[in-house]
Image (cartoon, rainbow, N blue to C red; front, side):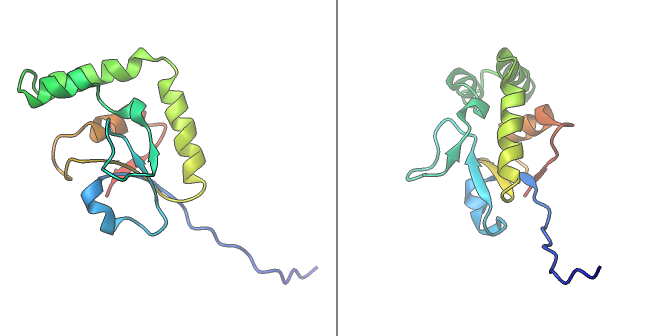
Length: 132
């Protein structure tokens, strides 16, 4: 039997991390998700505040009371406090990526120390996340 129906070719979608000011480099139609305590003014997109560092952790780091190593350890402890958090985040990301590329955003530029890189490592190897 000869099937003349055209095949639908779906491109693969990916999960990325980036920073808000880099939006002009985001793939068209991407689903942008804020992973900050406070999204940019006027933000009306998705938010995963459970991925943001706590106020105290940010304050300690920005005031120079802790270094990057201690920040990372405390942030991972924060993420691990909720035993179901990793599975919930993975479920949300897996649903979103079915629709289009997903970009987890915060404020720090590429190459700067940032919680999004720690979050990416924490979610791997279950989910592959690349930096844009």
